[in-house]
Length: 324
Ligand code: PCA
Image (cartoon, rainbow, N blue to C red; front, top):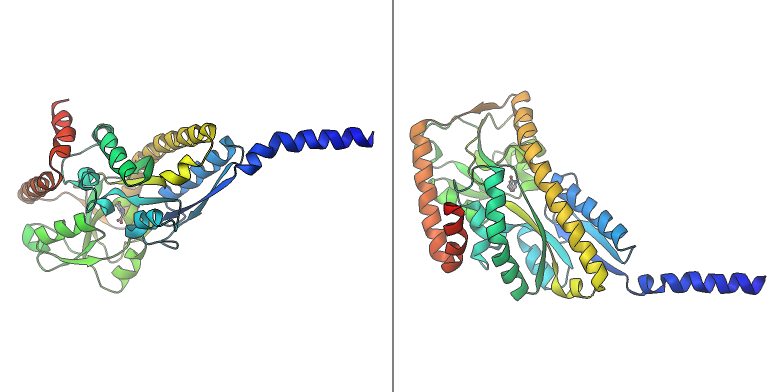
Protein backbone atom coordinates (compact mmCIF):
# COMPACT_ATOMS: atom_id res chain seq x y z
CA UNK A 1 0.00 0.00 0.00
CA UNK A 2 2.83 2.33 0.93
CA UNK A 3 4.41 1.66 -2.47
CA UNK A 4 1.15 2.56 -4.18
CA UNK A 5 1.01 5.97 -2.46
CA UNK A 6 4.65 6.67 -3.26
CA UNK A 7 3.98 5.88 -6.91
CA UNK A 8 0.84 8.03 -6.92
CA UNK A 9 2.77 10.95 -5.46
CA UNK A 10 5.42 10.62 -8.13
CA UNK A 11 2.79 10.70 -10.86
CA UNK A 12 1.19 13.80 -9.35
CA UNK A 13 4.47 15.67 -9.05
CA UNK A 14 5.59 14.64 -12.51
CA UNK A 15 2.31 15.95 -13.92
CA UNK A 16 3.13 19.34 -12.41
CA UNK A 17 6.82 19.29 -13.09
CA UNK A 18 6.76 21.13 -16.44
CA UNK A 19 4.78 24.00 -14.88
CA UNK A 20 7.09 24.27 -11.91
CA UNK A 21 10.22 24.16 -14.02
CA UNK A 22 8.98 26.83 -16.40
CA UNK A 23 7.78 29.33 -13.81
CA UNK A 24 8.63 32.97 -14.59
CA UNK A 25 8.08 36.12 -12.59
CA UNK A 26 7.76 39.48 -14.33
CA UNK A 27 8.20 42.70 -12.41
CA UNK A 28 5.82 45.20 -13.98
CA UNK A 29 6.56 48.89 -13.28
CA UNK A 30 3.95 51.62 -13.55
CA UNK A 31 3.98 55.33 -12.72
CA UNK A 32 0.39 55.40 -11.54
CA UNK A 33 -1.11 54.62 -8.14
CA UNK A 34 -2.35 51.17 -7.15
CA UNK A 35 -5.93 52.51 -6.87
CA UNK A 36 -5.87 54.05 -10.35
CA UNK A 37 -8.24 52.32 -12.77
CA UNK A 38 -5.33 51.53 -15.09
CA UNK A 39 -3.45 49.77 -12.30
CA UNK A 40 -6.56 47.93 -11.13
CA UNK A 41 -6.94 46.66 -14.67
CA UNK A 42 -3.29 45.53 -14.72
CA UNK A 43 -3.83 43.70 -11.42
CA UNK A 44 -6.78 41.85 -12.90
CA UNK A 45 -4.73 41.08 -16.03
CA UNK A 46 -1.95 39.67 -13.85
CA UNK A 47 -4.39 37.46 -11.90
CA UNK A 48 -5.94 36.19 -15.12
CA UNK A 49 -2.55 35.52 -16.71
CA UNK A 50 -1.46 33.61 -13.62
CA UNK A 51 -4.62 31.50 -13.64
CA UNK A 52 -4.62 30.86 -17.37
CA UNK A 53 -0.97 29.78 -17.34
CA UNK A 54 -1.57 27.63 -14.22
CA UNK A 55 1.00 29.61 -12.31
CA UNK A 56 3.69 29.46 -14.98
CA UNK A 57 3.69 33.25 -15.01
CA UNK A 58 3.51 35.53 -11.99
CA UNK A 59 3.31 39.27 -12.60
CA UNK A 60 4.41 41.43 -9.69
CA UNK A 61 2.99 44.93 -10.09
CA UNK A 62 5.10 47.85 -8.78
CA UNK A 63 2.89 50.97 -8.86
CA UNK A 64 3.44 54.66 -8.13
CA UNK A 65 6.89 55.18 -9.74
CA UNK A 66 8.46 52.91 -7.10
CA UNK A 67 10.49 50.70 -9.42
CA UNK A 68 11.05 53.33 -12.12
CA UNK A 69 9.60 56.77 -12.86
CA UNK A 70 6.83 56.92 -15.48
CA UNK A 71 8.97 58.46 -18.20
CA UNK A 72 11.87 56.06 -17.52
CA UNK A 73 9.86 52.84 -17.54
CA UNK A 74 10.65 51.90 -21.12
CA UNK A 75 14.36 52.29 -20.40
CA UNK A 76 14.00 50.29 -17.17
CA UNK A 77 12.52 47.42 -19.19
CA UNK A 78 15.26 47.74 -21.82
CA UNK A 79 17.88 47.62 -19.05
CA UNK A 80 16.30 44.54 -17.45
CA UNK A 81 15.38 46.35 -14.21
CA UNK A 82 11.81 45.26 -14.88
CA UNK A 83 10.51 42.66 -17.33
CA UNK A 84 7.34 44.58 -18.07
CA UNK A 85 5.92 48.06 -17.71
CA UNK A 86 3.12 50.51 -18.24
CA UNK A 87 3.65 54.05 -19.41
CA UNK A 88 1.75 56.75 -21.25
CA UNK A 89 2.47 56.44 -24.98
CA UNK A 90 3.46 60.10 -25.30
CA UNK A 91 6.40 59.45 -22.99
CA UNK A 92 7.90 57.54 -25.93
CA UNK A 93 7.60 60.23 -28.63
CA UNK A 94 11.25 61.28 -28.72
CA UNK A 95 12.30 57.80 -29.73
CA UNK A 96 9.06 56.64 -31.41
CA UNK A 97 7.24 59.72 -32.78
CA UNK A 98 4.37 57.51 -33.95
CA UNK A 99 3.50 56.92 -30.29
CA UNK A 100 2.29 60.54 -30.13
CA UNK A 101 -0.52 60.04 -32.65
CA UNK A 102 -3.14 59.85 -29.92
CA UNK A 103 -2.13 63.15 -28.33
CA UNK A 104 -2.47 65.54 -31.23
CA UNK A 105 -5.06 68.02 -30.06
CA UNK A 106 -8.51 67.82 -31.65
CA UNK A 107 -8.00 64.90 -34.00
CA UNK A 108 -9.97 62.38 -31.97
CA UNK A 109 -13.22 63.49 -30.36
CA UNK A 110 -14.84 60.25 -29.20
CA UNK A 111 -14.00 56.77 -27.94
CA UNK A 112 -15.16 55.34 -31.25
CA UNK A 113 -12.63 57.46 -33.14
CA UNK A 114 -9.96 56.71 -30.53
CA UNK A 115 -10.51 53.03 -31.20
CA UNK A 116 -10.32 53.54 -34.95
CA UNK A 117 -7.07 55.45 -34.55
CA UNK A 118 -5.62 52.71 -32.34
CA UNK A 119 -6.39 50.05 -34.94
CA UNK A 120 -4.42 52.09 -37.49
CA UNK A 121 -1.61 52.97 -35.09
CA UNK A 122 -1.13 49.51 -33.63
CA UNK A 123 0.82 47.73 -36.42
CA UNK A 124 3.40 50.54 -36.58
CA UNK A 125 3.79 50.62 -32.79
CA UNK A 126 4.22 46.84 -32.69
CA UNK A 127 6.91 47.09 -35.36
CA UNK A 128 8.81 49.85 -33.52
CA UNK A 129 8.49 47.96 -30.24
CA UNK A 130 9.77 44.73 -31.81
CA UNK A 131 12.80 46.59 -33.21
CA UNK A 132 13.57 47.68 -29.65
CA UNK A 133 13.10 44.25 -28.07
CA UNK A 134 9.63 44.96 -26.69
CA UNK A 135 6.34 43.16 -27.06
CA UNK A 136 3.14 45.20 -26.89
CA UNK A 137 0.46 43.68 -24.66
CA UNK A 138 -2.39 46.20 -24.70
CA UNK A 139 -3.40 49.84 -24.47
CA UNK A 140 -6.14 51.64 -22.54
CA UNK A 141 -7.04 55.32 -23.07
CA UNK A 142 -7.46 57.93 -20.39
CA UNK A 143 -10.81 59.72 -20.48
CA UNK A 144 -10.83 62.80 -22.76
CA UNK A 145 -8.50 65.63 -21.84
CA UNK A 146 -10.12 68.81 -20.53
CA UNK A 147 -8.81 72.05 -19.12
CA UNK A 148 -8.66 72.49 -15.34
CA UNK A 149 -8.00 76.01 -14.08
CA UNK A 150 -7.91 78.04 -10.89
CA UNK A 151 -9.26 81.09 -12.80
CA UNK A 152 -11.80 81.48 -15.61
CA UNK A 153 -10.23 81.10 -19.06
CA UNK A 154 -11.88 83.30 -21.69
CA UNK A 155 -9.09 83.99 -24.18
CA UNK A 156 -5.58 82.90 -25.08
CA UNK A 157 -4.28 85.85 -23.04
CA UNK A 158 -5.56 84.11 -19.89
CA UNK A 159 -2.86 81.46 -20.31
CA UNK A 160 0.01 83.94 -20.65
CA UNK A 161 2.51 83.54 -17.85
CA UNK A 162 0.36 81.05 -15.93
CA UNK A 163 2.00 77.96 -14.44
CA UNK A 164 0.74 75.13 -16.59
CA UNK A 165 1.31 71.59 -15.44
CA UNK A 166 2.98 69.32 -17.98
CA UNK A 167 3.91 65.65 -17.82
CA UNK A 168 5.90 64.95 -21.00
CA UNK A 169 7.23 66.44 -24.24
CA UNK A 170 3.77 66.70 -25.80
CA UNK A 171 2.15 68.65 -22.98
CA UNK A 172 5.30 70.75 -22.67
CA UNK A 173 5.00 71.87 -26.32
CA UNK A 174 1.33 72.68 -25.81
CA UNK A 175 2.12 74.86 -22.78
CA UNK A 176 4.75 76.68 -24.83
CA UNK A 177 2.29 77.32 -27.65
CA UNK A 178 -0.20 78.74 -25.17
CA UNK A 179 2.43 81.09 -23.75
CA UNK A 180 2.23 79.45 -20.32
CA UNK A 181 5.15 78.54 -18.05
CA UNK A 182 5.47 74.74 -18.11
CA UNK A 183 5.75 73.07 -14.70
CA UNK A 184 6.61 69.38 -14.79
CA UNK A 185 4.44 67.52 -12.26
CA UNK A 186 3.88 63.76 -12.14
CA UNK A 187 0.26 62.65 -12.03
CA UNK A 188 0.64 61.37 -8.48
CA UNK A 189 1.97 64.77 -7.28
CA UNK A 190 -0.76 67.00 -8.72
CA UNK A 191 -2.60 67.49 -5.39
CA UNK A 192 0.64 68.46 -3.65
CA UNK A 193 1.72 70.88 -6.40
CA UNK A 194 -1.68 72.58 -6.31
CA UNK A 195 -1.53 72.86 -2.54
CA UNK A 196 1.90 74.49 -2.78
CA UNK A 197 0.70 76.98 -5.42
CA UNK A 198 3.11 75.57 -8.03
CA UNK A 199 0.48 75.24 -10.75
CA UNK A 200 -2.53 77.22 -12.02
CA UNK A 201 -3.93 75.00 -14.72
CA UNK A 202 -3.48 71.75 -16.60
CA UNK A 203 -4.88 69.77 -19.50
CA UNK A 204 -5.80 66.32 -18.31
CA UNK A 205 -8.84 64.15 -17.72
CA UNK A 206 -11.62 64.89 -15.23
CA UNK A 207 -10.62 61.55 -13.71
CA UNK A 208 -7.09 62.72 -12.93
CA UNK A 209 -8.73 65.74 -11.27
CA UNK A 210 -10.84 63.40 -9.15
CA UNK A 211 -7.98 61.02 -8.30
CA UNK A 212 -6.01 64.02 -7.03
CA UNK A 213 -9.00 65.78 -5.38
CA UNK A 214 -8.19 69.03 -7.18
CA UNK A 215 -11.29 70.88 -5.95
CA UNK A 216 -10.40 73.83 -3.78
CA UNK A 217 -7.54 75.22 -5.87
CA UNK A 218 -9.16 74.16 -9.18
CA UNK A 219 -12.41 76.07 -9.71
CA UNK A 220 -13.18 75.47 -13.40
CA UNK A 221 -13.20 72.49 -15.71
CA UNK A 222 -13.71 72.98 -19.45
CA UNK A 223 -14.65 69.90 -21.45
CA UNK A 224 -12.52 70.70 -24.49
CA UNK A 225 -12.12 67.00 -25.40
CA UNK A 226 -8.62 67.74 -26.63
CA UNK A 227 -7.29 64.21 -27.05
CA UNK A 228 -7.49 60.65 -25.70
CA UNK A 229 -3.97 59.62 -24.60
CA UNK A 230 -3.35 55.94 -24.10
CA UNK A 231 -1.35 53.98 -21.59
CA UNK A 232 0.54 51.06 -23.04
CA UNK A 233 1.43 47.83 -21.24
CA UNK A 234 4.40 45.93 -22.63
CA UNK A 235 7.00 43.32 -21.81
CA UNK A 236 10.53 42.66 -22.99
CA UNK A 237 10.54 40.27 -25.96
CA UNK A 238 13.15 38.23 -24.13
CA UNK A 239 10.87 37.62 -21.14
CA UNK A 240 7.87 36.97 -23.37
CA UNK A 241 9.72 34.53 -25.64
CA UNK A 242 10.99 32.63 -22.60
CA UNK A 243 7.43 31.45 -21.88
CA UNK A 244 6.23 28.17 -23.38
CA UNK A 245 4.11 28.77 -26.53
CA UNK A 246 0.83 27.84 -24.82
CA UNK A 247 1.51 30.29 -21.98
CA UNK A 248 2.38 33.02 -24.50
CA UNK A 249 -0.97 32.66 -26.17
CA UNK A 250 -2.77 32.66 -22.79
CA UNK A 251 -1.02 35.90 -21.86
CA UNK A 252 -2.04 37.53 -25.14
CA UNK A 253 -5.62 36.38 -24.55
CA UNK A 254 -5.62 37.92 -21.06
CA UNK A 255 -4.08 41.09 -22.57
CA UNK A 256 -6.85 41.33 -25.18
CA UNK A 257 -9.45 40.96 -22.40
CA UNK A 258 -7.68 43.69 -20.38
CA UNK A 259 -7.81 46.00 -23.40
CA UNK A 260 -11.56 45.51 -23.88
CA UNK A 261 -12.25 45.87 -20.15
CA UNK A 262 -10.03 48.96 -19.83
CA UNK A 263 -11.62 50.83 -22.73
CA UNK A 264 -15.10 50.21 -21.27
CA UNK A 265 -13.99 51.34 -17.80
CA UNK A 266 -12.40 54.51 -19.22
CA UNK A 267 -15.61 55.42 -21.02
CA UNK A 268 -17.75 54.91 -17.89
CA UNK A 269 -15.31 56.94 -15.77
CA UNK A 270 -15.32 59.83 -18.25
CA UNK A 271 -18.91 60.54 -17.26
CA UNK A 272 -18.77 59.76 -13.55
CA UNK A 273 -15.57 61.76 -12.98
CA UNK A 274 -17.01 64.95 -14.48
CA UNK A 275 -20.08 64.49 -12.24
CA UNK A 276 -17.79 64.09 -9.26
CA UNK A 277 -15.89 67.30 -10.03
CA UNK A 278 -19.21 69.12 -10.28
CA UNK A 279 -20.47 67.59 -7.01
CA UNK A 280 -17.32 68.93 -5.33
CA UNK A 281 -17.96 72.49 -6.46
CA UNK A 282 -15.87 72.68 -9.65
CA UNK A 283 -17.73 74.70 -12.32
CA UNK A 284 -18.08 72.71 -15.55
CA UNK A 285 -18.09 75.27 -18.36
CA UNK A 286 -17.59 75.75 -22.08
CA UNK A 287 -14.87 77.96 -23.48
CA UNK A 288 -16.01 80.88 -25.66
CA UNK A 289 -16.25 80.17 -29.42
CA UNK A 290 -13.33 82.51 -30.30
CA UNK A 291 -10.99 80.76 -27.92
CA UNK A 292 -12.24 77.41 -29.17
CA UNK A 293 -11.25 78.40 -32.72
CA UNK A 294 -7.88 79.66 -31.60
CA UNK A 295 -6.94 76.54 -29.71
CA UNK A 296 -8.09 74.42 -32.63
CA UNK A 297 -5.70 76.40 -34.86
CA UNK A 298 -2.98 75.73 -32.33
CA UNK A 299 -3.87 72.04 -32.58
CA UNK A 300 -3.37 72.21 -36.35
CA UNK A 301 0.06 73.76 -35.84
CA UNK A 302 0.94 71.02 -33.41
CA UNK A 303 -0.19 68.36 -35.86
CA UNK A 304 1.90 69.89 -38.71
CA UNK A 305 4.97 69.72 -36.46
CA UNK A 306 4.14 66.15 -35.54
CA UNK A 307 3.62 65.01 -39.14
CA UNK A 308 7.00 66.52 -40.04
CA UNK A 309 8.69 64.64 -37.19
CA UNK A 310 7.05 61.30 -38.05
CA UNK A 311 7.29 61.30 -41.84
CA UNK A 312 5.57 58.60 -43.85
CA UNK A 313 4.33 56.63 -40.83
CA UNK A 314 1.94 59.54 -40.19
CA UNK A 315 0.29 59.18 -43.61
CA UNK A 316 -0.18 55.48 -43.04
CA UNK A 317 -2.38 56.37 -40.08
CA UNK A 318 -4.06 59.62 -40.96
CA UNK A 319 -4.92 59.08 -44.63
CA UNK A 320 -7.18 56.10 -43.78
CA UNK A 321 -8.30 57.75 -40.52
CA UNK A 322 -9.72 60.75 -42.38
CA UNK A 323 -11.20 58.90 -45.35
CA UNK A 324 -12.82 55.97 -43.55
N1 PCA B 1 -4.02 61.62 -16.66
C1 PCA B 1 -2.58 61.51 -16.74
C2 PCA B 1 -2.31 61.43 -18.19
C3 PCA B 1 -3.55 61.75 -18.91
C4 PCA B 1 -4.58 61.79 -17.86
O1 PCA B 1 -5.79 61.92 -18.05
C5 PCA B 1 -1.88 62.69 -16.15
O2 PCA B 1 -2.51 63.72 -15.94
O3 PCA B 1 -0.67 62.62 -15.94
